[in-house]
Amino acid sequence: MTTRCGFVALIGEPNAGKSTLLNYMVGAKVSIVTHKVQTTRARIRGVAIEGESQLVFVDTPGLFQPRRRLDRAMVAAAWGGAADADLVVLLVEAHRGLTAGVQAILDTLSERTDGQRVALAINKIDRVKSEVLLALTQRMNEAYPFTKTFMISAEKGYAVDDLRAWLAAEVPEGPWHYPEDQIADLPLRMIAAEMTREKLTLRLHQELPYQLTVETENWEERKDGSARIDQIVYVARDGHKGIILGKKGETIKAVSQAARAELEEFLGRKIHLFLQVKVRPNWLEEAERYSEMGLDFKDGNS
Ligand SMILES: Nc1nc2c(ncn2[C@@H]2O[C@H](COP(=O)(O)OP(=O)(O)OP(=O)(O)O)[C@@H](O)[C@H]2O)c(=O)[nH]1
Ligand SMILES: [Mg+2]
Image (cartoon, rainbow, N blue to C red; front, side):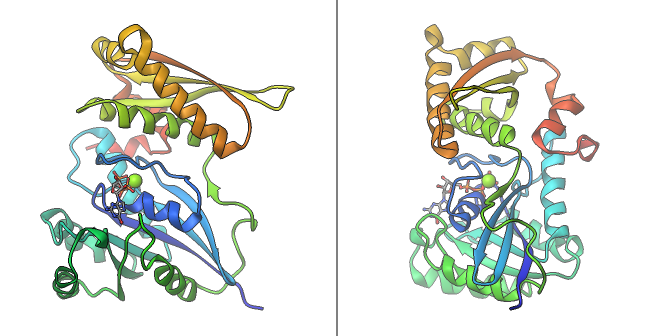
């Protein structure tokens, strides 16, 4: 029996649906998803099995024109994910088509990858008519020599099985990297912090979600099988702390409840979650914050 195993990087503009696709492939929510751009900040690995193949999907931050240190570190992590992978899947949004942002990705795609095959996944096909898809497929394939094109809906699961089957046949022969029952390669404390960040992002308006970070400070196993998790939400300004707490602490309470519920479902046990908001004016320039996020601080140097 020959097994196969390989790394598949999911790249694309922010909001293309990379994390949604990873979660669908894995069959569990290992990477957070929101309607806002720049949700994913680091490389997140999710594992799926198809026949004799183990597919290690690498979800990456979106590729965009970076301005801040954090942006640069995120974009570097995304391109790094593509360079290290056996196969690359570029996701584009069907209803947005070949945007300037997609063109910018195509312009450097071949030099950023190491000769790997790149498949195109036109995502969110549930939002457009089929004529649009055919025209876009043609335009995209004129713009870049994709090995193959898929038209999918990561959210609805349309044609995702075709993509998975193709990837399973294309990854190199070799032993599996992970035990059969492992679905993610990300420390639990980070998954827990990400869940809280997702709930904050969904609840807060405007720029604030981009200006905060969440860290799991302490994780204590209890005798009754439950766990106590303490997390810190770092913000840069005093005013932001007030917004996150909300009137009489309502906002942070709702966030904490939602994050706890999801964490309990993910872990299958009782969780006591405690959130604390800290004002840290310079957190976006602190190396430790980046390593907690799974990013390389030096990548942010301009
Ligand atoms: N209609 C539709 N929406 C989708 C589909 N796939 C993803 N979405 C939505 O698109 C939004 C962005 O999805 P994400 O998976 O967070 O996108 P991403 O590429 O990981 O975004 P970043 O992490 O910010 O780079 C979410 O609101 C998803 O629910 C799809 O197939 N159809
Ligand atoms: Mg994402």
